[in-house]
Image (cartoon, rainbow, N blue to C red):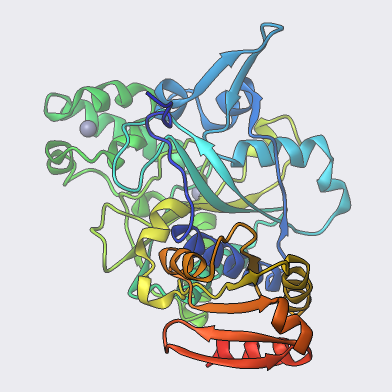
Length: 417
Ligand SMILES: [Zn+2]
Ligand SMILES: [Zn+2]
């Protein structure tokens, strides 16, 4: 038996890859207009980076990391997300010393040992941004508006933002304690995970997807009502900017996101086309993470979106999957002439392939058909003598001669028709 991919992983290739490239190119283009710069961090890091950065009591660190010892016995982990790595890089290269606001984005694979399901893989791809160095609520709003802009430009509709505030080191402990008290009173109604979380991470209980937990939490204290004046003001400004930017949002007091490091604003983007449990992406403010990593006090804001699932939402009809390659067929001893022709096309940005192995014109045309190709040039010995090629449009079943010096222009016109 030939070897297959590892469970939860997959190959992505033509034509699906076209959607991926479209999304990535569009996103890069838009990110550039907001002055974001790309960062590529290693796919693996010392385990400590993620244990510190993500929080010990998270499912990710507990159960989902790919961790192994390298040949020197050091503990290494395949990145399960990228914020911790970017924070590590930000500090390692002292990017804070440059001053100003640092805007970074990344695109690449992440790894989590989860149960594979539709659109969820053990190697999955994320696009994410991190903005370092500003407490300003404008940054929260603008970074949210940025992702809405990207999603709309790739054709998604019916988007809205759920938003909440998790407070700060002043007001969150008070809320946490009230919530803990409440949860202890309803402990018997909660799932096993939530029972454990009451002591370790009570806010995460609000996020539980188990229906009986949701029901039991109906009368839980609302974090919105325990925000301090500073947090209230911050949030009011975020709302104000979102409104002026034309971004629709809804306050969702039970939205806490899965990670420990968030402070103040947390948000997720949902689409009409998906159930409310299926957020397209999420993120928020993390003002203490850089400090916890041993760096200077640096407020930050970020989000990450899963490209695998996003690509599933893009409609096929918006993509041009047509095969625009020009297949060049030799006849007799004319392969050099085919290459000369291909070279002209390539210099003009047109895709072409010399069918070097074709045994006969008929076999070559059959092969083009199988590859769903449409455009063929016959460049044989007799064509070379006349300085022409024969152009065949297999779809319209037409054929004509084109002078070699005119092929780039004429074929561009044919393909754009
Ligand atoms: Zn506060
Ligand atoms: Zn639960």
